[in-house]
Amino acid sequence: MTEMDFFMVMLTRKFILTANIANLAEKPFVDKTKGIVKSHIINSALVPGLTPNGTTTLAKITGLETLYDTRKYLRQQMKQNTKDIHNAETDINDTLLGWMPQVLTAIGRDEAKAKLLGWGIKWVDDGQTEEPVASVTNSKPLISVIDKEVSLQHTIHIINSVSGSWGIPKDAHHTDVYIWIGDDAPPMDLTKLTFLGQAVKGKFVNQFSFQQLGIKVWYVAVYRSKKSLKANELSGAVKATVN
Image (tube, rainbow, N blue to C red):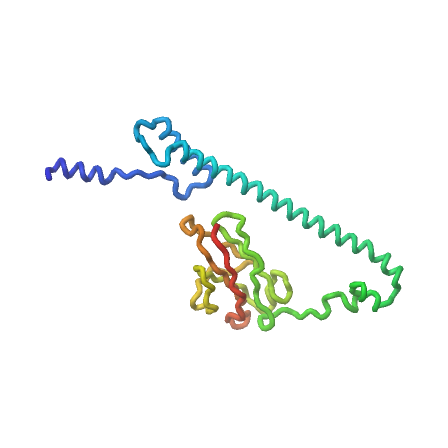
């Protein structure tokens, strides 16, 4: 091989195409890919016989834009649905409060009738007097919802098994969140799971790379005791797909 031949080989090896679309946000991704495809359509004689052809590929990009628009619409619908739920709950609550004077007029101070109708009695039975106080010994974290509204992101919502709220027991220091990747349920052993971090106000946000799209993951949460920082009873493992 002559020196010129060697030079040409090295030059050829270094001539590597790149689309420059990795890690782009959605709009720049669409703009960049559209630009490439349209350039190929306009200059089809330079690279004839592309499979699939430019027109078909451009239709794919248009389809992707439609999916983006659909997701935006669904998010708006979800927000409106949340507002509708709140308004409905408020309306029902106000209705029952409006009933109270009528009920009192009808039954007087008859506790048995009040209980028969499903009402509580303040300072006697307000629905809270017998509720146990949550602690790390009589409760555990529960993963109530895994929000997948944002692509490549999971927002894990955690509540207490006794109180039903996101607040941790007074004798808990914090809530740890762990992950297991795979189709099969994880071993309930923290030493075999991967630690993600601590939940804040009952929430933990876990983000993924594009390469992880479609994988199955499991989440596990646990309280750490304020006194010893030891892990207490684990939550159940909850599965989710990376969308």
